[in-house]
Length: 496
Ligand code: FRU
Image (cartoon, rainbow, N blue to C red; front, side, top):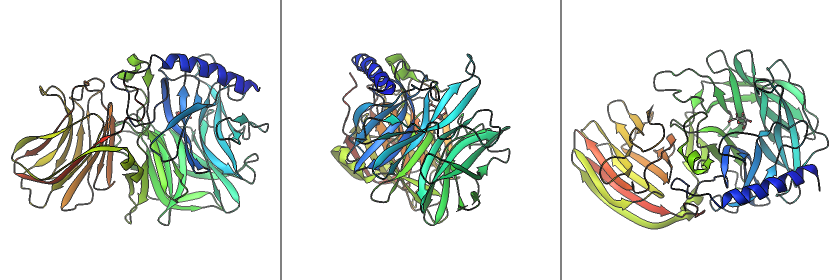
């Protein structure tokens, strides 16, 4: 048995023990979570031999960030997930400080993970060195680290040790890899090329900050949609600008054309992908149907996480289908497979809401809600929906549309425990109907406006009993064309 395998067995024993005490009111029903303790970024997304695999940054020993392992779940349908043993654990000189984020490819039938080995250079963990490494598996469950590791040991320029999160894809006969890095105080993404995943040739800086886009770029991802090349990444340190860039770190994208010869991406302006509170380090993959699917980490670095008191922290978003609109806006839509989770269904039509609120005969803390507001005949100022409402009015989470400036607001100031605040964003394409499609889980909400045109994600920590739903209108009579609600299945059954 290899040192790595032995190490995983030991950690798994501790995880299974700790799992016996896992539960609590915030434990999610249908989102991917670690069995216990801490998780962050989605890693290694792939459909391999028909099955979907999702790995994630996992600290198996307590609910705060620490030595990174790769947790692992798999699924046949993208919504019913099964936890399988840890895939990667720090065990070698080149990853002793953690197996950081990375991706997965199918290399002639061999499931191959490409990740960053982190090594701390001092005790305070302020200095580090990062190596790109690979691990392979024949059964999709057990991984062996490659003898060629590290497959990339030296950065192309001085990046203060920060070069990580390899995302690898095939183009023509070659493998390409992007890495997130920095030079001075400017974030960058660099491109490499290889024939065999073990020898990498530096191509160029694909894109970089001009000084306004942060000091470090993490988790780059490159893919092709609607005739364009898209670079998705998570820059750290962009200054807030009015309602934009309100979170500590951002996740967004550049749309353009990648020249594979020069390695340069000619691109437009940076655009944030999700305008809520908790969305970071997103990664995509192409499935066997040719769809581009994304998962994000549904949390934010340094935010208070009330679940830590219950022994866990971190979750992934629901899987989202990416499409590039003709105006080069990236749309995110819930994947159709989420319909497999639907249970009880309620449909209400033509609801009139006079200036004020209207309580719906629907309740829940694991719900899908589809509300269609008629904008065409509304003469008031604002309307929206409140979810996770307490009966005594003490808690509510508000999604609101302001007619004058077409702003959508996500207000979690009265959502319960945790950090409050609001996020606002413009719905930049007007239609006669405004559709709010909301996925509610025990400690999260994900709002999709007008079929993925605007998406806002956030963790909320209401009381277990706050389950009410209300429509509201301000300054005029509102017609809600239809409300549909479905209870969603609890795939984990871990609340208690
Ligand atoms: C992003 C990130 C990555 C890194 C990982 C470590 O959230 O900082 O850059 O690989 O988390 O857990």
